[in-house]
Length: 78
Image (cartoon, rainbow, N blue to C red; front, side, top):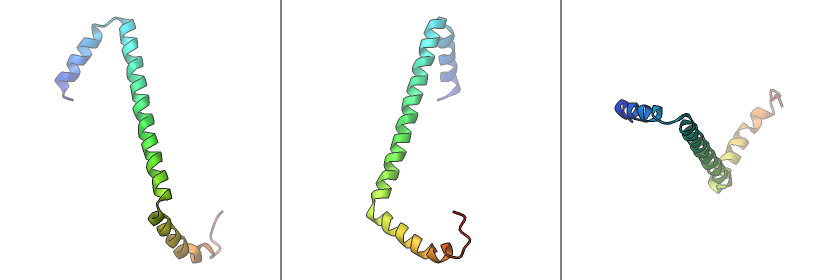
């Protein structure tokens, strides 16, 4: 969005009453929360799909096998 458009929006907002400005801010806050929530859900869905992917599971198993010797060297902190 360019500076001129933002300036026009700011000018329009200043012409609103305080109650209208508050209503606009509440609307924007709700919309941002919904978009953030949706993005988080998409990330979690992607991670779940990866965790259930047989190819990913095979890779993880191979990595774990490769590092099994290292885990047995006594340096593990858990």
